Each structure stands twice: as C-alpha cells, then as structure tokens.
Image (cartoon, rainbow over all chains, first blue to last red; front, side, top):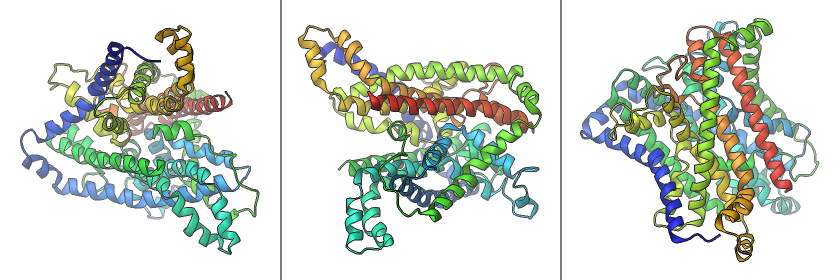
Amino acid sequence: MSLSAPSRWGLRTLALAYLAALLLVPVGMIFYKTFEHGLAAPVGAITSPNAIHALELTLLMVAIAVPLNAVFGVVCAILLVRHRWWGNGAIDAIINLPFAVSPVVIGLSLFLLYGLGGWFAGFSEAGFQILFAVPGMVLASVFVSVPFVVRETVPVLQEVGTEQEQAASTLGASAWQTFWRVTLPSIRWGVAYGVVLTTARVLGEFGAVSVVSGKISGQTETLPIFVAKQFEEFNYTGAYAGAILLAFLALTALLAMNLLKGKEDA
Amino acid sequence: MAEALALRLRLSGQVGERDRAPWLGRGAIVLYLSAIVLLPLAAVLSKSLEGGLAGFWDAVSSPESVAALKLTVIASLIVVAINGAFGTLVAWVLVRDEFPGKRILGAFIDLPFALPTIVAGITLMTLYGPDSPIGIDVTFTKAAVVLALLFVTLPFVVRAVQPLLMEMDREMEEAAASLGAGNLTIFRRIVFPNLLPGIGAGVALAFARALGEFGSLILITGNLPFKTLVSSVFIYQQIESGNTSGAAAVSVVLLAASLALLAAVGLIQRWAVRR
C-alpha cells in the first residue's frame, strides 16, 4: 500500500508525537532536572556513603546473579534444543514464569519460604540470615532474571544446527571439546545478548528485592531502593542523581543490545 | 526483548535426536528451577489456602482488594488498547517510512525494558508531576496509573509487530491496489489480518506485564486506597502490615491471570504458525 505524502507525514507525526510525549521528552527532562543547577550537588549525592554502598550492593547482585543464570541458561538451552525429553515442555513453561509473576509476588514468595514458619525457616534458625540480608536479595535477583539467557540462546542453537557438532565428533572430538570449540563460539552472540538483558534486569530490580531486603540504609539498600527512599524523603537531588546513574547504566545496556543485535543478524 | 518474548516463548519439541540421556544436567536444571522458582511460588499458594477456601475468598473479596483488582484490570485494558494501536502505528512508521534519525529512534524503543521501573516513575513525574513545565500534573490520579503502564509496556506490541511487517509480502498489497482497492480497504483486508497474531501476542504480553507492574507506580500514583491503589501495591502493603495470607491470596489471583495470558500467547503463536 503506497500512501500519499500527506497521510505518510500524518502517520509519522502521530507516531513521533506519541514517542516524544511518552518516552523521549520525559527522559530528556530527568537529565535536565538533574544537572539544572550544576554538577556539584548530584555528584555529591551519589558519592555519599549510603549511595556508594547501594551501588556496590547492586553490582554484587549483578556479579552473583548474572554468571549463575548465564551458566544455567546455556546448559538449559542445550538440553532443551539438543536432547528430546518428555519433561522439556514443563521446563519450558517454568522458565516463562518469572515473566508472568509480579515482582512483588516474587518477593512475597521468598518471604514466605524463608520467613518465620516457612518451609525453609531452618536456615535463619541455624543462624544463616536470608531475609532482610544479602542472600535473600540475591535469591530475588536470580529469580527475576532466570529466563533471559535461555530465551536468547535457544533460537540461536536451533539456527546453527548440529552439522558442525557432528563433524567435530566424527573427527574424534570429545563432547567437552565439541562444546568449547564448536557450540559455544557459534552461540556466543546470543548468550551475550541474554547476559546484557539479565544484567539490565538485575541492576534495576526494585519490587522483589525491596520486599525481602528490609530496606536498611547503608546495609540492604540497592541503588533502585536508594532512589525510591531519597524520593520519599523529598531529597530530590539524591533521587534524581541516583536515577540518572541507573538511567546511564540502562542506556549502556541498550547500546550493547543494539550492537549485539547487529552481530547476531550478521 | 519483546520480540524475544513474543516469538520465542515456545521452545520445546525442537530438533535433537534421542541419545544417551544427559541425566546429570537434567537433574541440575530441575533442581535449580525448583529451588529458585517453584518452591517459593508453591509457598505462596500454600499460604493463600492457610485459612481454607473461605479464608482465601474473604481476603480476595474485601472491598479494598476488589477495588484494587478492578483498577488494575481496567487500567491494564485501557493501556493495552492504546499501546495496541500506537504500537502498531510506531512499528509501521519504523518499517515502512524513511526519515533521518529513524534507526536511533528504533533503538530507543527498548528503553522502557532497560530502564529500572523506579526510574521510569520518577522520569514521568519530571514532565507530568507537580513541577511540570507544561502544567500537566497527573500524580495521585488514575491517569498516573495509565501513564506509567503505557510507558513500561510500550515496546511489547512494537517489537511483536515489527518483524511481521518486515517479512510481509508487499505483492499482495500491490495486487489489491491494482484491482482498485483503496488504502483503507488494503489495510483492513490485507495488512491488519497479517499483523493480527503479532498485535495479539504483544497485547497479551503487555497485559500480563501491566497486571503485575509495581516499581513505576509506587511513587507516581500515591497509592490511595479505592482510588489509585493497584493490586501489586496492595499486596506490598499487606506484607508490610503483616497480613501475609491476605497478600498471598491476592497474589494467587494475579498469578492465575498472568499464567492464563501466557498460555494465550502460546496459543496465538501456534495458530499463527499453522496459518
């Protein structure tokens, strides 16, 4: 269907106006608001001890949850694609669950499992604190980011097929060698894309982590929780500065996603 | 990512020969998913039924809980209707139109997925909050719920429709045009039916996301009971006030709704593949 110039312009303007009103102008505004009175105040706000601690804790979540889910994702994808089993359908459905469940419900689920009277209350009774401490927050981060690497790796695995792997094993390569030398290199961009998505999700997770964290300043406060708290305490400089730091990390992830998408398609 | 969600939700039943079963890996995967995902969710289900079915029903049917559920569902319906239409339009413009900056704009579509939800709420408030430079303040109103949900669900429909538009055979449209069909007829009879599976999948995923959304709403809506309090925030407040079985009951309702939607996406995709 070939549109006349006026209707093409009309549609373009409508689409751009919608994106501008919803996405582009608000994102521009928060950058403007943060730096409107110079750099000193926002920089001061995100170099305060509580902010630094929140950033460190957020990065710790990433450092634990991302490698865990990356290894899980690759193993799981290979099993789903390369090995037929009656349980694959169920595994497939379970992997989708974290997409369907509200972050608050995820937080609640860990709260109930490890809390007083929960099935796994034994951990804290034995002196290993899970709720209102880092382990609980790690579990929440891992839960919310389970699906990404699997989802991104599976289609790539399907596409590359098994010919090269079969050739490798015909030539005498062990299963392990085949995986490292043939399979992994051919799926690396898919895995990398999944890792970026996982990282972005863990960096920004708020609902699930805040339910299990207890939100203790300087102890169990991640960067998103820090931002929310600053905002609720009317400390807008701190809130905006923290938000910008997170937005900057998100934009970096977005850039990485687009670069990797290019590689994947190539 | 929406693309990833929409088009890659069904994975199993693929190539692969029946070979010596890798039981070690399988066991590890099942154990991992059970410990991380299944057992916690089972704990919610068990807690929600602690007081029997009557207790479950009491928690779900309390006036505050019903009001929250109603708002959540109605706001989500409005949001997916708007994003269904505008998402399709944006996808159309990104695929069929040419203008400077189009590629950069296309890259920005995924921003709501990458941006932490708490930042999304604060970002919207800089333009539509009390200090709005354009004089529009939606905070603490139902419009704020809709606005925040529009933002976080924006990419779903765009990303689900885009690949369908790119793959679409333009010869059909040309044939229709040469037979004298106007643009509206071509859109209604040819383009729209071809895009429908994508729009459906995108809308269902967006709806599931909207039902559970929390972070972007908590600051901008003010969480006023019977007015702007959505279910996820209601659950959060019940946890904070120690009513975990009430929180669990409402959670189960949300969970069931989201699962039904994911199942719907699966069906839509199978239907689309068969066509």
